[in-house]
Amino acid sequence: MTRIPNTTTTVSYAYTVKAQGSVIGTLQGFNPTANRSLERIREILNEATDIVEIVPGRTEFSITLDRLETYNESMMEALGFASFEDISQVTDPIQILEEVRGPSGAIRKIVYERCWVQTWGKTIREGTITVTENVTLWPEQIIATRING
Image (cartoon, rainbow, N blue to C red; front, top):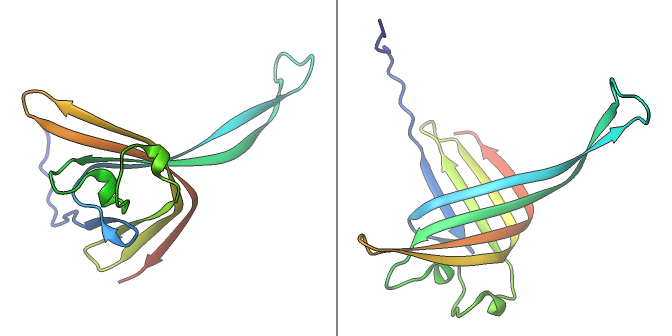
């Protein structure tokens, strides 16, 4: 028999993503990722336990943003670019701020500094007539801070 939990706990928080100090708008997705290569160092002529160690490589960061396009403002305009025809015109990096406020008043801020636009795309879905734009950014540095409420 499955028991119903007896709890008063609720999960609630406020989440804001800003570009150049301005709120981007309602995002369909905000996906920061980090990955790094790993190199196996092997010992020659040792078939049983040939891995001596694993050496981590450099960490690579990226952020993918998904947002419904609005008639008044495209994704690139929401990111702070005045005009946009293609990404070859984007010659300056931007700053992205991710801010999470918990119910206790605690704030977690993650600043993605000097983000360069790597890709831009648009998806138009028939039937619902939704237009979603997506952008992938490569930040040069990430700084995280926590302020207890």
